[in-house]
Image (cartoon, rainbow, N blue to C red):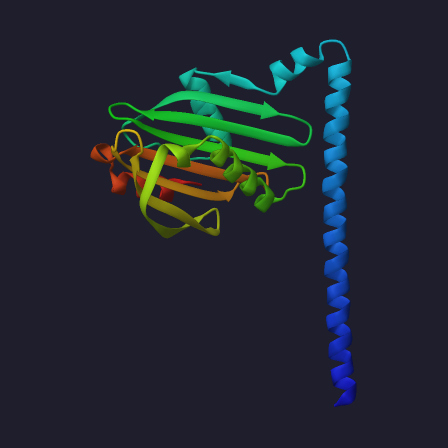
Length: 217
């Protein structure tokens, strides 16, 4: 009996050592990548045409509807609900990170449907998702709307159970009621994709929204 306990304790210690080494290795890799980013940025800025290179290859924005659909297909395969038309798209491709976003607007009321993707060379889906959440916070959606009620619903997307947050809200300045939904799931490149939906309550079609989420593949 004493021998068995000793073996179990030894196994637990070994597992803790393995996890510790894995965490240290992962942290080291993140530091290396951050150093690489700084080195590459410095190299481009000190070489001729560095600024032009960044503008041409890192932040490519267009309002071409065909480009918006094409970029959306890169991010996610989805059936866009009726009442939304392509507005614009933004893409960034760097050595260690890739970002893309497409924006659809409602054709009658005030509303937006946004697909945003973040990939990184770590293949860290949680890190990419956190970056998308921070980006959403920086853009101030929470400051524009007052959330009155929320609920979470689960959907199966790309083999993963994903939670979407459905919200009833109102615009702080005008008091106009809105409906919104937000969800995150893995991208095709082990990063993350975020879906951000909002529309005036008068134009809200919940069945259409749910059908769109269920169509994601």
